[in-house]
Image (cartoon, rainbow, N blue to C red; front, side, top):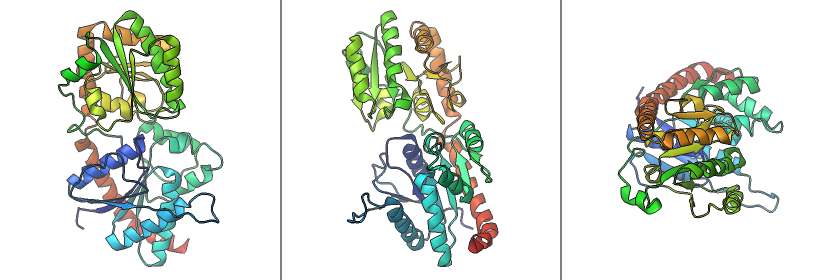
Length: 390
């Protein structure tokens, strides 16, 4: 069998973690010679330059008077059937259980009726299990979709165990962590940029998220308020979402508008991380903590909560510090400790980079490649008969 595969990747084309990981995974696989087909309703946020072996198929929904909302699931299924058949794909890799894994199961059944078997790998990213999956209205579909996938991966050991705890899962789950592309995320000399943000040499704190409640952006600002009392500093808030308005109001309330910059969604987030001294991640739920990993690759230590998969990335007392959820006082204390001790900050910077290198894309991609080939071997020769009789 040719080691180079034709892979369909289904994801949400957003700035959220699952879309970013799916896109970066596809780009990395394409560089290794695999043919990658992205199938989604909009071009993914990080799929912004031409690259060999990359193809994009847009799912276009149509409005019908009968439907209050466009039936995206049906449109996606039809597009997947078309792409699998006419591009002769070897495997579908769907990111996020709802609706992608459920749609993929329907696609398998449609194609099987036409004599073609397409293996499906589902990657669980976090909120599809901890938030959407926790909703009783969706839980049966999530569990069914996971069990009917030919292969299942989770982005952290924490998420793997959380999935088994929350659902009745018969399938095996492979923990394959998120990764970092050091061609992009690396500390570059941006002193001119840093001086524009902090002209008096102030320390720069940063936070990147989609500004949902779960990210606790208010805690970021409260931590910064206490840091600012002790050392001259600036705060960069990168991203956008429903909590931005409340965050802006909080800055006005405590009188720190001049010290906080709301930068909105940014494609070149690595250029902003390159000037940061500390990254703040006080989330109440993180399956992995990709934003923290990207900061660490740029040699930025992390102050975080101790929830979910974050401790698998940010090592307490080595690459940064953990605090209990909502403990703004402790987070601020740890931040001040680092920002006022240059030698300690420099040590933590080096540690952060070293830890990030364990998640180098070159180390993680082979795990996916080996897993794909394993799933293809096992599904084609073991599962086709049982699927045909279901």
